[in-house]
Amino acid sequence: MPSSRPDPRACPCGSGATHAACCGPLLAGSAVADSAEQLMRSRYSAYVHGARDYLLATWHPSTRPARLDLDERVRWLGLSVKRHEQAGPDAAVVEFVARHRIGGGSAARLHEASRFVREGGRWYYLDGDFRD
Image (cartoon, rainbow, N blue to C red; front, side, top):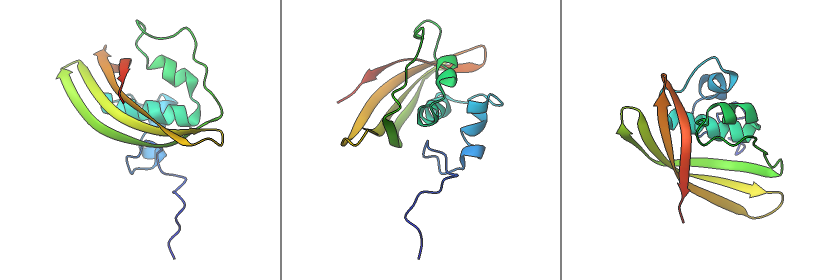
């Protein structure tokens, strides 16, 4: 009988690939994102893994916070990419829904349209607008 438990090797970003073949190299610094969507997926994986340094390094300097505090009670449950739209050769929007739970609370959704820019061959998260 097949197990209903998720594959622990699967990338949390929901790509269907293993973490080692997907977001793992980006989080480790041995690869860079080829697209805004790939960067957004890797940033979701970074939240799952608590990779604060990666999140800050991939945040555009003009909007990056001085520090980032991650709530260890948050459990990320899944990611759904709604759209990836190129707004030019070095700008893109990625709309997504990320599901999470805080402690033993009910699951909640974070729905955001995020803006990304590419500078010096690297994509950066710029900012985002929350959706209902």
